[in-house]
Length: 466
Image (cartoon, rainbow, N blue to C red; front, top):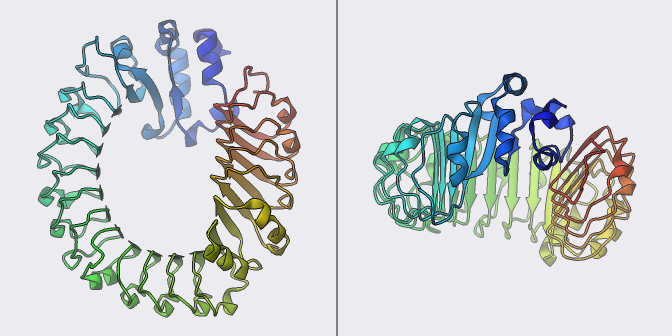
């Protein structure tokens, strides 16, 4: 009632389109406001409402987020309790100078009109994407968290280095990373002219991906987490991995992984030269994806969490038939389906992407230990027969599924981006239901007794179920 008294009716419905229970769980989530009516700003000025909201949120990075077009920003300068502002693409007829705002974070995307970012020096988090009008990033020198992507006109990155977190994506002029040595979390992606990564030694959390000129790792080491993906295929210097606890390698020609035997977590993807993984028998978590020459994984029974996908050459796996925590990822390709069939009696977590579900359905009775089933990016119409007793079922972007028939005895159901979903009556007795972005879902009255219900961005045109 407090909310409704301060919001216009349109904004009230939009704000509370999920559930009143979301307010009980604010300590674990953001609140997002998209205010399209200037009259709605009066609730933000009310001390009772402000104190109530802030009392519900204990972490400063999980406070209020607002999404505004830039021509409305000046109208909300007094909102001192807003912590993150997302600036939408703006029109051509307004002033494109970003005013100083008392917020913690700014998100700007896909505008060539913003040039001056001097007012951002006092915020804690800046995320810039596709803003090609920005050439000078010196104001970001002391910003704690900086994310920049597809900013083709930025030539000089030397002012960066004081950040706690820095993410750079598709910055072709990034060559010198000498100043980055003190950063705690650094991610460099698609920076095609970067060659020398030696200044990055010792950065606790380091990720380098799609940087084709990076061909030597020997200058790195002493990382907590190191992720190297799709850099030079002929990388050298792998011996430094013996000092890393969390390792991820993708698309390189490494054949010997014995230097990783003391690691806590190892993820190996698309390693066509890899034959033997026996040296990884004592790691706590191991992921093997599309390593087509691996034939024997029988020695991995002591790995606490084992994730497998596309291992067509496997012939020896008997000792992990009843592994306590086995996850299988599978897609349409025949070799991955063959891998799936080999482990149907052991798998606990199953992820199916773009799979022929009717062809897969007859296998379901074999998955006697299955706890979690995720089906994503499926364009076929299918029924979920055989899924009733699986603990958690998640449907992601299954564009033609219309009904939840076949579900109902589950503990947790998650449905996201299923455009044709219109009938959820079978979920009336499911304890936990989450539904997002299902535009044709209008009537949810059948879910009124679900103990933990979250619905957002659907076609629901009333809030009676809250």
